[in-house]
Image: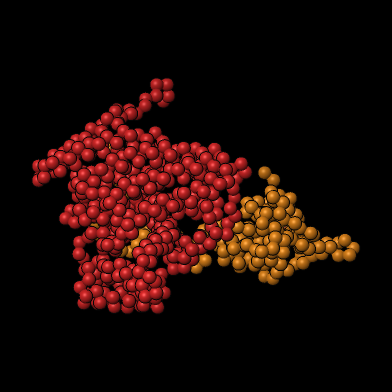
Length: 423
Length: 197
Ligand code: SF4
Ligand code: SF4
């Protein structure tokens, strides 16, 4: 089970080997990986929109999409169809070439970062020895796309949104990069696979420096992909839709695809860098399958035929898993953790109002940046003094400096105003 | 402490999220937390909302006993008072000599059209009618495909019985019935000489 996809791929390659010359096989293997990622990405994006709408709806005591298909599961398809047949408007006076190029430039890096993502044991498209650096470099291309789109639209709202976007992405790039430095220090490698291996005994998030770095990396990531509460570039109440005000139809869908893929990538990289990646405790697979039996059996919306079929399938595979003594596969762990973080992203969106521009910048420069620098020192302590004393010192350093930074950033609380001439 | 407000907010949304699932409600009660407000959604075409009695959408003409015994006398007050001018009345019905025709002792309109797409549900026609001949209906699924053939309701479509009125708005209908009964008693009795003060 664990190596399901790896085995699948190698058998397809072997099958292809019967007809193709030996030299072509690496290309077949590469092509398969690329095809898998390229096919999975739109599906991931479509169902992220569904997931987001469902979760947000539940937080607002609504049902969310429930008309198209079971649980509204076909809603993303319907939306995609709608986007496809919508008119594509390019504003007069826009720079046509750049205007149509921008969404593509946004999507491509969002897809490219998946190349270094370890989805499971041995499931990494390209385990570059500079994988982390590659991720940091490629993911920041999106600021170009945002500025291209905003500038080429010849619209003041687009331009304002784009400028905000670029300022924000560049600001949050700094703490985000500095926060992963500690991972490199401790793991001693830039390869994503190596970083996951280094967390075999303890996930980095369970160390003081790892916890702080994970928090900063994740929050800066949220800011970099322009999601609430950091969605200043798309603040509806001020600048319509920000940099994608002038986009419609499929180009608009591409913007959204880039945004959702980046959100997914941020969650996935937080999982890889700090939450142990595809590692997880060896829970027997049949526990999970038993849980899904209960879920399917009690779901009232599903027609009873499907319910019976689902229960039978789950029980059957559960028995097989029990006999084969299977644990939960590594890719399932990875996906579960990633979707957990995606839930957190949506949870933020359902809860927090948008920050002001100055608060946003202040958070990056006045709080995250110093904290990441201190965090590096704390990780250095941890590495230099193995054992409990180093851990205690590192933790104490972080707590103290965090408290100090909060104090520094909030000088005096505002007193309630007293009105002299008004009763 | 800074950040406590954010955590509280996150807890509120998480609670509302969990509270919409049976398993989540079970968990929340186990934790001793409030289970949130639960789902509000009414899945419209399958489930219909129970409207309050005062809910009003579009007027209809009341008749007693049979449809030709409608209360409207074609006085056209409602036509004049309707703010968006969506009532169109032709009548009262007359014979060849120009004398008003009567049914059940009353004049009656030849045509009585109301345009659904213009009516703004203000109930002014009901308030001004001296004969309680027009009342507000609460049927609200009034969409149609044809602007004039389907959206302009004719007299025949507008006529609904007093029993229907009593059924949809019992309180208001009984008030109207009492008022009409009092009026009828007054006209039936010989006029009393006014008592001098
Ligand atoms: S509905 Fe009432 S106000 Fe309108 S024409 Fe008839 S009697 Fe007159
Ligand atoms: S409810 Fe108002 S708008 Fe509608 S017909 Fe009566 S007076 Fe006119």
